[in-house]
Amino acid sequence: MTSPRYDIVAIGNALVDVLCHKDDDFIAAQGLKRGLMQPIAPDAAVLLHRAMGPCEEVCGGSAANSMAALARLGLRLAFVGQVGDDRLGRLFAADMAASGIDFPLPPIATPTGRCLIIISPDGHRTMNTAIGASEYLPAAAFDPGIAADAAILYVEGYMFRTPEPRAASRAALAAARAAGRRAAFTLSSEFCVREHHDEFVALIEAGLIDILFANEGELAELSGRADFEAGVAWAAPRVPLLIATRGAEGAIAIEHGRRHETAAEALGAIVDTTGAGDLFAAGVLAGLARGRDLPTALRMGSIAAGRIITETGPRLPEGEDLAGLIETRLAS
Picture (cartoon, one colour):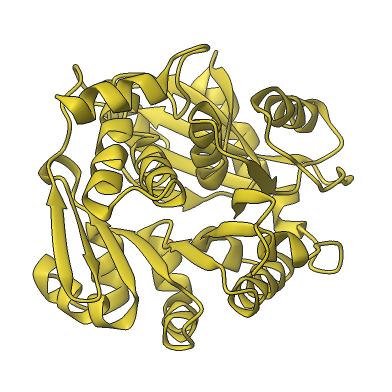
């Protein structure tokens, strides 16, 4: 097997996050369900954006957030996502370039997607996403060879919501399998699992997923079991590596029947949980790509997640040494 060009290639929605802090009365007044991620129509997104008032704009998307953190850790990366030929699309492409992440797809006429994030006083987020151009990531324009040229392919479950990105993701998973690479998959959200339950199970049963990331709610939706341990018992035998998070209760990993656990890392007051899952995945993937043992990789994810929840939004401050923080915490 030839050495891959990239440590990790991710396929995901290319979005710009629009963040503001509001109380729960505002959330209720907008007819939203607190703490959930849900799709929103473009017209409704415009109205909600106006109601939110002045906000911060930050490049986002789940896998893109993970890649931004991985870039801080010095890995060789590419991100496959679709933006529009507009201000937000140019902002996103410039952010990828500044991070040293290859970003191969050209823009299209459809507006760039956005995620409207309302942050409650306790740090929990209510996320409303109009995916825009990401809905049209073209399967025909995507070269599956880029997936075969990565040690690890990382795919968002969100990519299965529309036909073209779904076809591109399936082609990438198949290319990774044919090339003998590892494929990681995140279930993305509870509603995403509800929408695509049978398809996700089929991917697992077909052996296309080597590493499955899930939080407690997503695992319950996938397994049909409300009890966490029952969900783990259902999922763990079906994938080579299951990684499941439980918020403040930490995370577990089960590889070929062997279980590892890590506690949540407390690195300061919780401000916003928006990027916790994305940074957790980044830490774990970095550890695996660098050949660290699984308990160490799991803790790397916990440290990265613990750091991001002390900030507003899913990206770390400019110039922050995430690698140094992780190594310091691992040594303590």
